[in-house]
Image 1 (cartoon, rainbow, N blue to C red):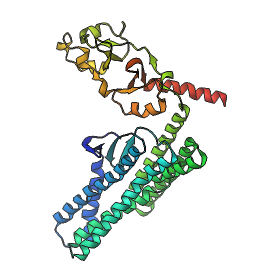
Image 2 (spheres, rainbow, N blue to C red):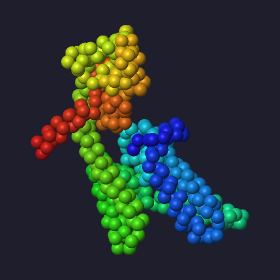
Image 3 (tube, rainbow, N blue to C red):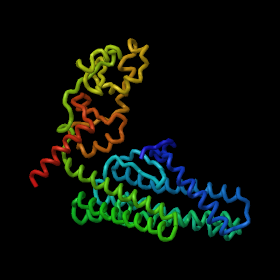
Image 4 (cartoon, rainbow, N blue to C red):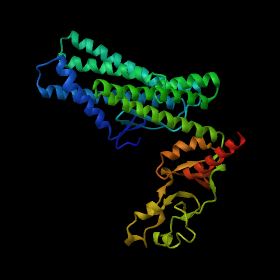
Length: 379
């Protein structure tokens, strides 16, 4: 889930919003302003219901962010790199660059989210009781009470033992600990996720068809998300199992064709695609031979035609600091999630600062196809 609006960093973690988050803000606002608030406290002006409902929706998003931040902070403390957090229509997603190294780390990372939601729910419960004791506006107390209830409900739902929910991570940690087999643990949690997802889809559509309750569509949508995500996680686990212990040096393209930083765009284009430069991406070397960056055909295509004769590849390239780099002995399974979230879908392989290869998602897919075929043949 890619962010649409970056919000900056919180506790060192990049945070962003996906455009679909407007859906949940709208649903919460309308549901409170047209339903719960006027039913509990009728006779108030419409702007009071609407304004308070919108404020509650924003605070609810903040509580979702706290849930995901808890995952991210605990993940970093357990040696797992965090790429960022994105809030979207169905909640939040903390993007981890690698998997937990041990079942214990998996358990701690997974439990952090629901525990945070319980704590937030308890905090709002106490605040609602305090405001009620002070005889504050009943409308405000109702909104705070809703925030308390929704956070506790969020914790309970996320604790269900089904991937990709936090409870599914806990289930995977348990199976992993008992069997010492991460792939088997992932399959078990993913199967539970699909079962829960199909159950929610069936009951959601049943509510719509038999009872005319349109809120069943929301349950069906969440169920579909669970089925799709659980299936994707199982496939990723199978990929990791096939590539387990495979170093980058076995899948990379060795001694890739390079280009100098001083070459002009015009000179570069003159030698391709039928000359020396017949690829779509090239490492760029400084005059002293050091790796300076990466240039792609897409980047060159953005250069205005009138400056082709003066603009150099050093001006056009993506600098080394913005490129995924890896060592030959690093594992492919650890590189894969970094490539999937990178801009160029490529990594430069450096050995002591010296360029020795380049690896792309296509290289990994090709190796995976061979390994899968070999495994089936042996079976």
